[in-house]
Image (cartoon, rainbow, N blue to C red; front, side):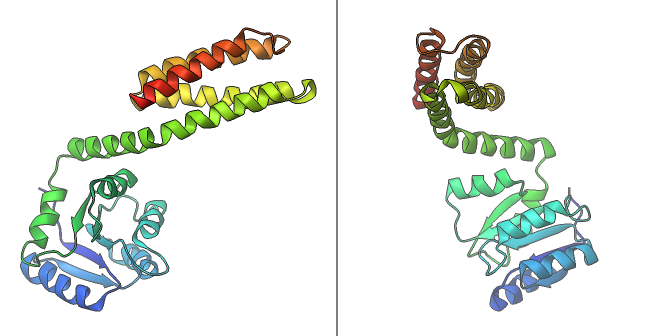
Length: 236
């Protein structure tokens, strides 16, 4: 069970801070440090070294996500578990926050008598389970962006094919870098068919770089076929 002695609560609403502090201090039995802004949270996290940070998402100036990223960038605070609190608890929003690296998400409104129990429940998850949840969230985010990435490669290929002889090789090289990146990342994120298609496109672009790269080169047809296979795999 995760040991909690000190918790940092970050929320811009005074009424929320009041009742949450009462819950965390008197129901949870924890020393509770209060911050009303992201900027203040960054300072207090370094000073007090809390065991966990309870962070509101919707705050003026520096919101919860920006605060989380700033905490993760500081060596003194990057390993402190962060739990987001938000009224937006749709599944894709929760996945987004967990994908950032948050330990979990607690919805608003919350029950003050149950808040410490919810925090313990999140922190008591095995590290492997929390890691699995984060990886799955990242995979879903990547999947949502994959079609756009493939269309970006298609645009780069079309630009290369339309380029004049003086600039065509550099344009092909740019498309090759995109295909090479997608070959690796698509496979890593679980999209084997897309990765295979990108490997064939990558090879065809390499062949174009070695040859005259004119419009009659059959490599262009291989590239188009690879793009179609990748797009179909994403749509399935």
